[in-house]
Structure formats: structure tokens, C-alpha cells
Amino acid sequence: MKIYNSLSGEKEIFKPIHEGYVGMYVCGPTVYSHVHLGNVRTFMSFDMIYRYLKHLGYKVRYVRNITDAGHLENDADEGEDKITKKARLEEIEPMEVVQRYTVDFHNILNTFNFIPPSIEPTATGHIIEQIELIKTIIDNGFAYLVNGSVYFDVLKYNETNNYGILSKRKVEDLIHNTRELDGQSDKKNPQDFALWKKAEPQHIMRWPSPWSDGFPGWHLECTAMSTKYLGDHFDIHGGGMDLKFPHHECEIAQNQAAKGITPVNFWMHANMLELNGQRMSKSTGNIINPRELLSGDNNIMSKAYSPEVIRFFMMQSSYRSILDLTDPGLSASEKGFYRLLDAVNSLENLPTSTSSSMDVSAWKQTCYNAMNDDFNTPILIANLFEAVKFINQVKDEKARLTKEDLALLKETIHAFMFDVMGLRNTNSIDETGNTDKLSATVQLLIKLRQEARDNKDFALSDQIRDELDELGIQLNDGKDGTSFSL
Ligand code: AMP
Ligand code: ZN
Image 1 (cartoon, rainbow, N blue to C red):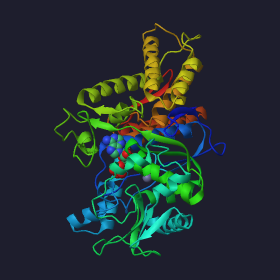
Image 2: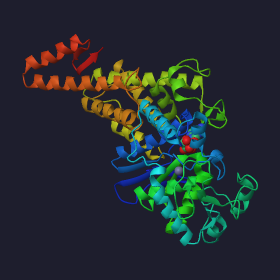
Image 3: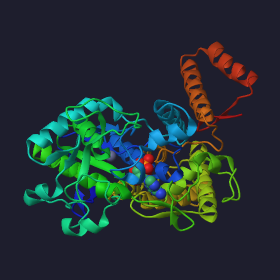
Image 4: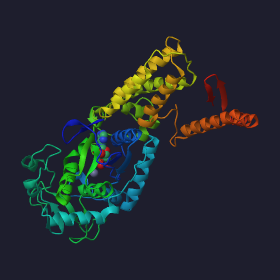
């Protein structure tokens, strides 16, 4: 399998540090407002990557944090904490803001059928680890203290290391590129970044430290939490493209300065979702809330779209391409998704033959080839549509398929559509995913009924059929098994 590594700018063969195991860290949301669909896209890209790694049999420890402190306005080192600001405006506690938007974030991800990460640590839960890291960086000579705040000394670090290794920027060029407010900074150089900030009297989210009552810099939490759970050197670190600099560049510098090693083998960056040709972003207001897209209650789209259609739309482009969210684009995805789903559902009743006119094993391999080429979901989907064409030919008796090949085709399509891409087999899913669960439950009852029949326990098999019938669920026995209708 090859993965595009932002560090080298090339697709590289993926080899985990410990055979069979993968450690993956992805920067999570700052929970001060609703997630927008752009955020969802980045997390969905990594959900797909997580799913595929698991599908390949890796034991994956997937860590995705919640930023609940330390992230200041404009991603700068001065100014108000994003969460505190929201708390002030709404006259509630900062932790109420955190709770509200963490719950909202989880609800949205559930709607889109995400698999939860293995660990979801918070910045406020790891203040001690962050303080310990700062102590080490100071001891190693790469940070300095001014007026109770601690800053990372970029020029000093760059004498023996390469600050800019990931973003390909030059330290000299960075001076004009920093978002400092004139005269407000204690920094020796504008390139330096905060590891610890002394809290102003009005700053509520504060903790004691050897330097001052204050709070950690935004970049530090990810270094502390990724290495705590994945080790000082781990396999994959991901995030949105916009985090490459300064956030990820700073993470590399912090780890290198504290531990003398680079933290990550593969840096992966997901590309941006755009709306009307412009990046979706909270700061410009060019956003769409996922719920507005699901309910149709917005001025941008002509109708509502289901979570499956939105997910399918996102999977139709590579995670490394910019994607523009448009009504015609979603509408085309909707048609495509249901065409695919129709073919998948018709597999249940497809006639079989003594020979196949398609090499299903070779086709299956093309699906793996697509995914093994840096998770190329658009090519995977094109391959699935090849299978749709073939399935429709079999339906029209213009092509043949053996029973074994039918089973292989079904297994492969199910694996890639549902396990890897995280789609669900239903036309209308409510927010809790109940329809999907109902379908799985009825399939289980069909299986138990078949077992009863095999054991000649016809009283039980009839009871299952009759009681389902009373609930409005009809079982239909065909020559290729039993299907059900509501
Ligand atoms: P934030 O909560 O602003 O820190 O963002 C959470 C994640 O969403 C980060 O990984 C960002 O890179 C990502 N993100 C923000 N805007 C977009 C966008 N328009 N498209 C895709 N990802 C985005
Ligand atoms: Zn991060």
C-alpha cells in the first residue's frame, strides 16, 4: 500500500513501525461552535482511512483529540481563547460550551456513520503532560521564559534542526508571515510560538505551573497527547491541509526539541471542502451546517440530502483533492448512489449459472489496487460501477455468474461500500440510524428461521414468519434465499 506523505511530497510504501499495528493521530475539533461540513469532510477522510486500515487487518489505535483550551482567536498567540469568548457571549461556563459542542460533534458524526476513535483525549485532561514537556524543552535549551510565559525559540532550534521541514517554508521568510499584534508580544522573535501563556486576570481557563497561572499553547496539546498514547515516534498523523503550518510544523519542532526524534512517519493532509468556489470556513461565514443540508432548511441547495448521499459525494473525490459542494454535484451523487444500491440489493435474487462471464477475482483486485494507491476512493467507486454494469447484464441474462462468484462479488461490494466507505444500505436513515439496525435485526431473524427449518423445527420457523408478518414485515422466500419487505 502506498500513502502520500506530505513530509516527502511523494507516495511512499506504507510500512508500520510495529508489524500488524498502526498508530494514527488526527487533530480534532476546537469545540466552540457547531462543526461545519468542511470539518466533517476532513474527519470523514480519516474515518475512511481508519476503516480501510482495519479492513486490511491492522490493529489500529486511532487517537483524535478534542481541543477544549488553549486555542486563541485567529490561531494566534495573543487574544481571547475561542471557548472563553463564546462562554462570555452566551453568559455560560467555558465547560458548558465545551460540553454542548462536543455532544453536537458526536451527534453529527454518528449521523454520518463514523466509527469512534480508540481514544478521544482532551487538552484540559493533559495539562500535567504539557507542563512536563515544556520543562524538558526548556532544559534542552529550546525555550525561554518572559513575564510568566514560555516561548519556543525557533531560531535556536533551527541552528541544529530544520524548522519548515514539513511546510517547506524558510525561517527567514516567516518574519513577515506571523499574525502578531504589534507591541503585544514578549517574544524574542516573531517566528517563536507560545508553549505556555500567563493568563490575564480575565482569562478564566487557567492552571498553576512553575512559570505562572496560565494555559498551554495550542500546538502543545497534540504533541503531549499523540506521544502519550502512541509513543514518541508513531505511524500516521493527520489533519486538514490548513493545519500543516504552523500547527503541525510546531508539533514536529516540539517533539524534536523535547525528545530528539521526529514524531511521525507519515504526515497526511486532507484537502478542503469549498462552497461556491471558496473554502468553507467559520471565520468568513462561508459555511453550511450539516443539519441544514440534511433537513433541506437552507438557501443554498434545492432539497434535502441524506447522510449516505453526502458521504458518497465526498467519497467520489480523493481526500487530497479540493471538493466544491454544489447542488448539481450532490444531485448527481444521489442518482449514482441509488443506482449502486439498487444493483447491490438485486444481488440477493440474481440468477446463477455454471460459468461466469466476468473474472470476479481480478475485479476484486482492482478494488484493492485503487485503495492501496493512497486510498483512491473515486477509482474504487468507478470499479464498483463496472460491477453494477455487469450485475445489470446478468439480470437481463446477457451475462453469467457462478454461485461462488456471486458470493465473492457480494462479499467484495459489501466490504468496500459498507465497511470501508462507511455507507449504509438504506434509502432513508433517520438521525439514529434505526432503519439500518432494523434491517440487520430482520436479517438475523431470517438466519435463525433458516436454522430452525434446517433442524425441522417448523413450529419455530412458522412462528418467526407469522409474528414478523403481524409487525408488518413480510418474508419472501425465493430460490436464492429469503428477502423481506416492510
Ligand atoms: P477546527 O475545529 O477549526 O480546528 O477544525 C477542525 C478540522 O477541520 C481541522 O482538521 C481543519 O483542518 C478542518 N477543516 C476546517 N475547514 C475545513 C474545510 N473547509 N474543509 C475541510 N476541512 C476543514
Ligand atoms: Zn493538532
